[in-house]
Image (cartoon, rainbow over all chains, first blue to last red; front, top):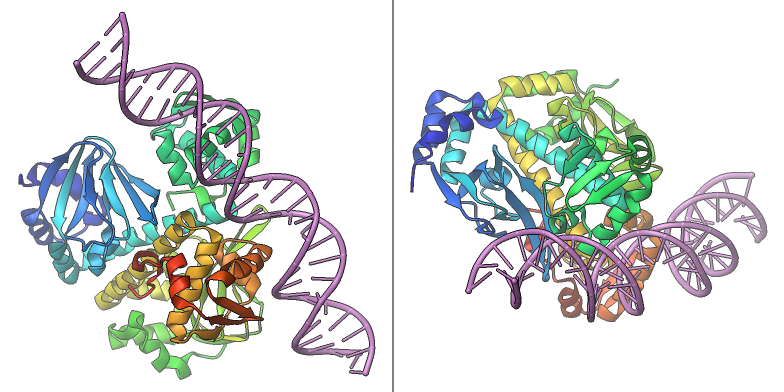
Length: 233
Length: 233
DNA sequence: TGCGTCACTTGATAAATGTCAAGCCGTGGA
DNA sequence: TCCACGGCTTGACATTTATCAAGTGACGCA
């Protein structure tokens, strides 16, 4: 297994690792390694014990969960960020499974090392608090989105968020529609119809290309709220 | 405002405060005070900036959220525990509102003090990590519950969890049915019908008294999973 | 070039869930 | 004791969402 040394700087620049002691960081990097995965490879399975903290360097990873033969997509992890920090720290079973969406390069930090450094490095412990708070609040927002909105409203707000990210009224979906449907908590068929349902509010769909032709109208329908849709705070 | 001194020990016994330095704990208690609230009083409103970390000493508190005239219940806080830690630490707007359900006694710790102690007391910072991990995982489980299950299945699993908590096949609901409905993500009418729908699986409902007459059958239908329903890990 | 695969779409239908309105019933106050 | 209120239930109905089945179209590979 190749050591993750070449990606040292990218890892160090993450808020989670930026403030920790050099010696702690060295200890983490020493046991780490990097691996390349093809698309659609299972990385972890829910219920298992966390062996590694994962860092996506390139590509993307789908976090999902199954029950009773059903499956739902919970999040997409894009570079450069970590995933499943809480399970690693608590040494508790994964609550989600993870698979690559595309060819991905991933750094693996042994969970034991992460917990050892957590125990000794105070700056790292505080950085984890910040990260976990962020994750927690993101999931709470997601819950509100699910419980307070219809699927049409969720889609409308999703599109507005994509617009904000790209700073443009025309953009491509970064996700397969089937996964987007699962993420938004609906079936692909329903998503297809939801896109049609947003046409009257100025949403044009061509394949995976989206054009928002009447922002005011769409915003009026979606009624976005920073307490649900703002993913920076 | 009366000082929270009389409840010192109950606070100190919480995992969040158990390991911190005596001097840090003193600093927190110094600025704290305790307040009694009647039922149905708004404690905080989503969007506001967190002035205090709240600790429920007695009574109970409903955490809920609103959007577009709709409202949903997200959690119930029972003694003795804190709520809205993440917002306090990040000094970011509350994502949920809170109101008392019954007559409640609540300790208020000024957010500034909590953040100051967080900055200086390493044991406290680590305890916060544990607490936040727990909260994060609870919300993730809740999301899975919502996305992977029908309302009937959510109710069945809720009842099984209550059974586990009370260690008894017969118990009283600890919550108004209307709030339970909101918590489970359905309307009161739907909940009423869901109870009827569980009759064939051995669930008897009389007012707010529940009797599970066929645990095996109900369990077979509910198919509980520790990765969704176990609220201890 | 052609063919299979797969995501996506569309239509028909069914199931789940919400809405509205009315009635029931226990509780607390006058 | 009686009445008013609120929570709960029930029925009828509407809406939302899922399911099933068939068809379209793009893409990759032989």
